[in-house]
Length: 579
Figure 1 (cartoon, rainbow, N blue to C red):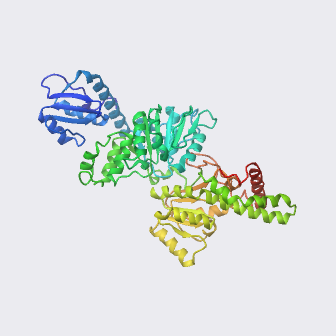
Figure 2: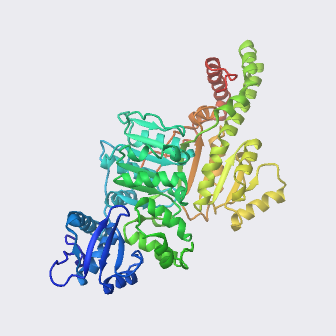
């Protein structure tokens, strides 16, 4: 389509003029002052139009609303103030460009492929369409269901546009994952500079291409980030901004206003609560849905009420207007493997880890002092178990935060772990998700009741001990999350297969959450799991982990290497030195 719609053609400035049109720089709106027949009609026709008293009507200066105003002026021509004529011409040009992009997207969805020289990876067909959408819309919400690669589509956008410097705003537990994904897809050769902001007190930011900050720090940087000169901002899990009136919301709004590209990522677009979806969309594109009063009056159950009357209609409106793209796994299932594994690095509490590991220093001294093989083997086993437990506990709150986000996005999750102390942390951190447990501490009747509660939909979260998963049939699950690792690949495979069975109609997503330190390093090396390995989603070749590669006869060698690595680490930085 090469011509813009008829309602966007030029308005004649001849004949009878029904009033004047001028721009109010303070309120960022276009104001009509004219005959009551015009202003009264404007207020009746356009929910976003306001203006107290006779003869005044105001329109938000949004490129979509400019089209409505131009359409009205074709019937009731207005005199455009000379001082605002060039501004109006630019606003009309932006509205025409917006209308053309929207029509092209509706008639023939565009696809795009990021340049090989700036992007390391292969997008699936639906992801290439997602990239085309981002490139066309520029201010929009990518609302694909969990597991379809929203992060990598956003990174492909950066690789294609090179719109740096870019700011990525993410929840705290996903900051490390963004670092890893940037390194994998955009920066394998280290040519891009990445800086993670720390602390609430602003400091002089170093020169970088990509900056990462988590939502809890935004309020402290409110006076700095909006004026920094970012070209692109990506709000991951943008539902974090669903409530207005907070420091982080205000900071996010100012950052968005100053950027040319604003992308929101969320697997849970919020329709039912009108206030929340209005707040989210307002961050992406100010007053895209009009002001709150008119939005609540027309879309919700009444003036200033929160609940949207017809959420499916609002969803279709956002898609049709080019604001939102959402694909479900069921819609792209043919492009996905039946089972996908994602190895994701997650944060942990180093202080907690080192506190738990203090007694190990003495055991390491005994280990170094003895040459007896049997004695050394006993000490090795003891140290290994202690380190695995410390690793699981240190990362447990971050695993819980990750799982909480999955459940809130509608996923049905099996959470796998090994230690009872870790399960106890999950129970406390995830109590609002009403988890059920199968940990080896329950009776057979209690285990069956937990499984039945999950399969019947009474809960969407079932926590299971890694070696207690045999015999269970839990195909309702859409995600399996490993909060702790086991030495045996067969144990992981068996846990995955509790969900991946006959009757499983979805593409099962298996998350392996690993810590940057502790026992996970040695265990994931033994299992052949690489951070950011997402078999099939990015079109990677090669089979899943070779589960015959690690034989039971190698167990002693694995544990010995873990203890030796720990001994070297402790010698360099004793556990007593807690930062």
